[in-house]
Length: 194
Image (cartoon, rainbow, N blue to C red; front, side, top):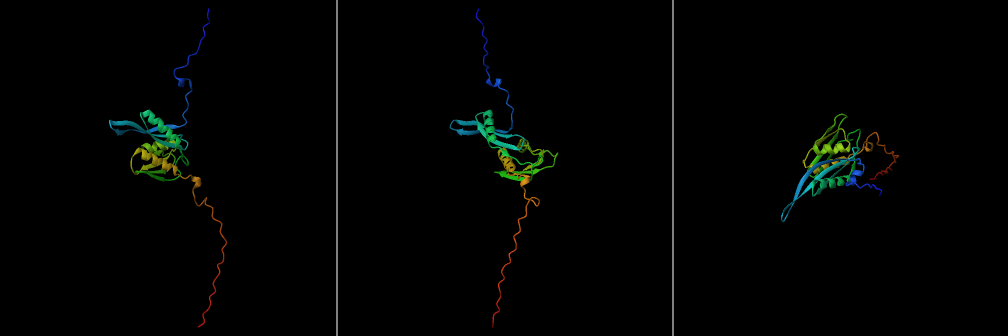
């Protein structure tokens, strides 16, 4: 009698054998748009995705990319966002100071808020502040409502924040050492004889 050898067959899906990788970033799709280019035979449609990526620990990035289908566009935009991460300076779960930024027609104003206020922001701005780890802030969009430009303006505003320990105030501004007063030579006046 021949011995029956048991062989394990490889699984059809190689990802099934791997443990699920825990995501270190919070990825959110802010906007998906169908864009077209006109060619000789008609229109060619593609998809453009705007994605924000953050770790909720003061790092955030946005990406805008196009792809043949929605999933390809979102994947590309996520990779772009991960490459363009910025560090956000926070002070007690809010912004250290008021900041304004303008990109193209979009104009954004971000203000710090006291604890318990929450995020007073809409749409794109709220999503970016959430994934950046901001818990209390006020915002106002003063210009265009274009989502891409608003996202870039928000990132510019967050990038221009100055940490509280780098502020120049009366407390941490060291007075310059006083130079000893140097006596100026006095010119002697000569009396004119008439």
